[in-house]
Every structure is written in structure tokens, then in C-alpha cells.
Image (cartoon, rainbow, N blue to C red; front, side, top):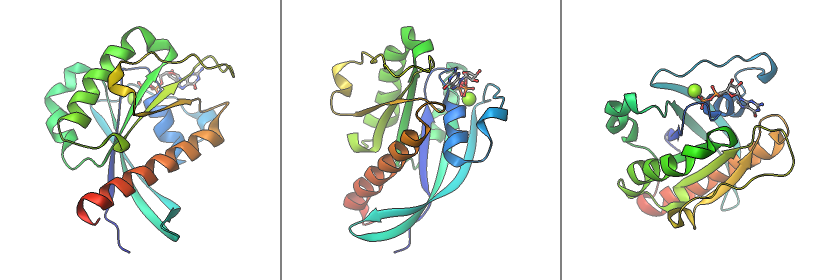
Length: 182
Ligand SMILES: Nc1nc2c(ncn2[C@@H]2O[C@H](COP(=O)(O)OP(=O)(O)O)[C@@H](O)[C@H]2O)c(=O)[nH]1
Ligand SMILES: [Mg+2]
């Protein structure tokens, strides 16, 4: 089975840890040494997920992860960001909790609802910075009642984060398959 590159968008409020997650997932840097800077507009990270089990077949999926700034000053780029997107990772965090709920709703409408992606093509990563096991839950609107929500932390829950990301890719591939025999 040949798969084209899967364009996955990662977006959410500034400082919610998107670039840190993107770096970790793509294994392009050592997290301990990584200093992130505010992403200017968008940064594209390419990597592959090697062993995805789809209907009993092991396949590899090439990912194009678009690490997008959530800053509204880049809103003029949003139409280009949205083009050809197969999956959307919305990132909120404990340190942006005050605005996350409203922002994520807005982003969900623009990047998931309007282009008519299915709920399975979206996941909310809620980044918990306090390095604690007890996770505060993000109180999101009913819009998100059937969207997966996952508590993440690159330091204390790194194994879990990889699994959660892989599960999301699987969910995206399955949704896309249904639509266009991807
Ligand atoms: N304590 C802690 N800090 C984090 C974590 N993830 C990111 N940060 C810090 O939060 C800030 C914003 O992270 P960044 O990935 O640039 O967020 P972005 O603006 O959403 O891309 C940086 O100073 C990171 O070092 C985490 O899991 N724990
Ligand atoms: Mg960033």
C-alpha cells in the first residue's frame, strides 16, 4: 500500500508547548538541550511513523507535521495552512488555560468543522507543565464532547505521548481511508 504524506497541523495558543511536542515526537532534538523560540508563522517537521498496524498490515506513514503559531497576527496564512490537512492537533496547556478553551473552539471551527474533517481527525493535547501526575482537566465546550482529549507532558509522560500520537495517526489514516480510499 502506498501512502502519500500525511499533513498534520498542530496549532494552539502561544507558549502552550507545541514546538516542544513537535520536536519530541519527531525525535529531531534532545529535549533537555532544546531551547524553543516562538515559531514565526509555521515550521514544517517531516518524519515517519514506521510500524502502523492497519487492518493487520504493518505500514509506514510519512508525516508532515505543521507546527503553526497560534498567534492571530498570522491569521492571513490560515487558508494556506488548512489546505490538504488530514489531521489537526489542538494544543492547550495549564499555563494558557485562561484562553485555551475559547481559542481551541475557534481553531476547531476553522480547521476541523469548516473543511468538514471528521472528529476522528482531531485530537486535543492538553499539556500539563507542572510535571505532576494529577492532571487538571481542560474544561472545553460541548463541541469537544466527542473529540479525543489527551493529557500530555514531554518529560513525565513521554512514552505515553508517543503512543497517543501514534493512535491519533492511526485514527486519521482510518478516517481518510473511508473518504477517498487513501
Ligand atoms: N515545565 C515545562 N515547560 C515546558 C514544557 N513544554 C514546554 N515548556 C516550555 O514552555 C515554553 C513554550 O514552549 P513552546 O514549545 O515554544 O510552545 P509553543 O509556543 O506552543 O510552540 C518554553 O519555554 C518551553 O521550554 C513542559 O512539559 N514542562
Ligand atoms: Mg512554537
